[in-house]
Amino acid sequence: MLPKKKKSADLENKKSLFFEIGLALALLMVFIAFNWRVQIHETEEIHSAQELTELEEIVPITRQEPETPKIKPPVKIKLQDVITIVENDSKEEANIEIIEEDISQETEIETQPKEVTYEDEDVDETAIFVVVEEMPIFRPDICKTMTEGNIELNKYIQKSIRYPVIAQENGITGRVFVRFVVGRDGRVKNVEVLRGVDPSLDQEAIRVIKNLPPFSPGKQRGVPVQVTYSTSINFVLQ
Image (cartoon, rainbow, N blue to C red):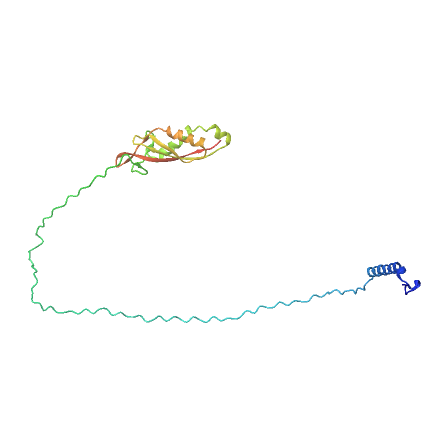
């Protein structure tokens, strides 16, 4: 079968040419699109800012009405029971005998005084007292009162203290509070530290108190008793 078209009218041979022309046109349009400039209008600056008016807070005006006094309710009066007096119609006579005695200023009245006995309260000699009638006195040979004894006690403690070497090297100072018991014979016992500072200082305080000379024993109603005593030792480096 013979072809109907002429070779000069056949466009198949020109396909590559049309493709190149189309591609060139597309590239040209893209190039023009990238280089296209849009006219920009200049913006005007706003120099005057809008003034904002603050809304004033409207405070409602209130009027405090005077309080009306409260009316107390009327007090109710309670009627008490009415006591009626009834006459005694009974004819029985009261058995009351009245004996009259002639008593004048010269009449002697015998009175027997009752004997008043006082029980002596035994003092527990084994108990440990805090406060007694006669407090212990340190060094009774040279002190007559407890105040003098306390002054002499402080002097004795200051002379007897041997500052521990460990505490001196570490610069440890402070006040040690000690409590002990003065027995019935005036000797010191039951020594304990109430508030310590350092083990070395606490042991030195206990040693000094245990070696104290005897006190004059405390007395309760003339009976020697055991009394607690407390003091403090101040350790200061010089």
